[in-house]
Image 1 (cartoon, one colour):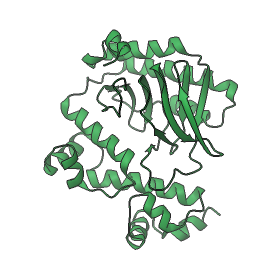
Image 2 (image 1 turned 180 degrees about the horizontal axis):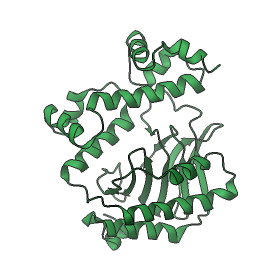
Image 3 (image 1 turned 45 degrees about the horizontal axis):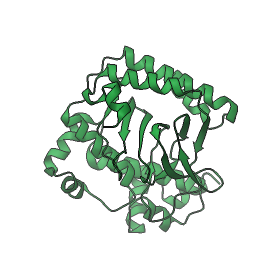
Length: 289
């Protein structure tokens, strides 16, 4: 754990420690700049990227966060420092390069909760996510509306909106009754994060279980006890949501959409998509043209 994490006592995974983390971030805001990560252009084919279906904020605490992301016009290469924020709209992608030591606070507005994560990348290489706290309740309507405004907000308004979101998130965390995550919850969150970052490659329950050194049956129990859906349903939901976005907003061939969503058979992808969305990919795309 890096110096900021140790100073704030984050190793205890307590609510108080993560409240101190949000206070530390608020001292840095208004930031020098709020960068916006966009959905377009799509990420390079065959490259594993971080991509989430909900708003995400990356705030460096120390060092420099080096990454590539879509910016609406092309691929931007950024090095974020304390005082800067990267806001990623839903389905925006980013490719962290993990070649700069840094500490990072990540604020995530998932449908079921607000999650605050501390990342220590001070020793080089990709860190393992394991230091986080989340609310027991979903984000309020106000929080969701403010987060939704950010993508279209002018540059001069983004700093104020980011600060407001962190203040509201702090209040939600202070008032919430969530308990610190136990070992099983942390393992579930690591696996869920792995799926969100690697849904574009061929995978299944057995492969993921081997990767995490778990019994496949235990992995299924983790999703039954800590998630809203089972393992296969969770992976399917992530893939189908991204497939629908690509069909709506890009001209990628269906073969390429299937590949980017982890399917190597276009026929099988089309059957799964039809079962999920009630129509084949081509007809779904034509509805938005």
